[in-house]
Image 1: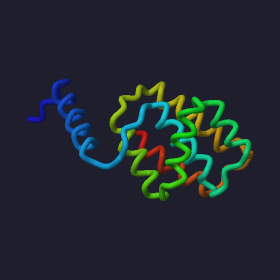
Image 2: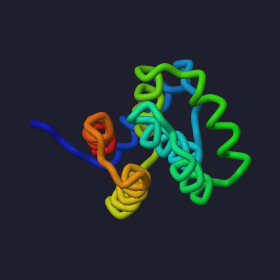
Image 3: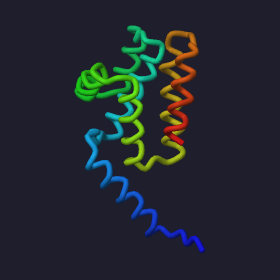
Image 4: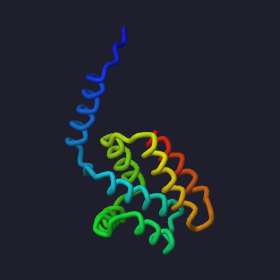
Length: 131
């Protein structure tokens, strides 16, 4: 019989955190993670426009933006997704928080008034990671 209890959930979360701590991926705050996700959304079509940058900067603390943007520029596409996936696992998001994050991601996708195929693909990948 499969017994599900809150204690088991805490053990799973603790286990994920232990695995994370042993990995080389940095643990980000939610604000840092959001900044990184916003940059990924803006870069989905391989061009980050000035409008996209301004929108991201309006959502993110300037110090966090600079730190995360430097890291983002160094990472490959695969590494970017892996970092997001590992950090998402560490934060407990409510459905409301996830909905708000998705809304902000779509604002960035829509800032150039086009929803390119590459942006749609990144949107689907992030949707799978978030949910």
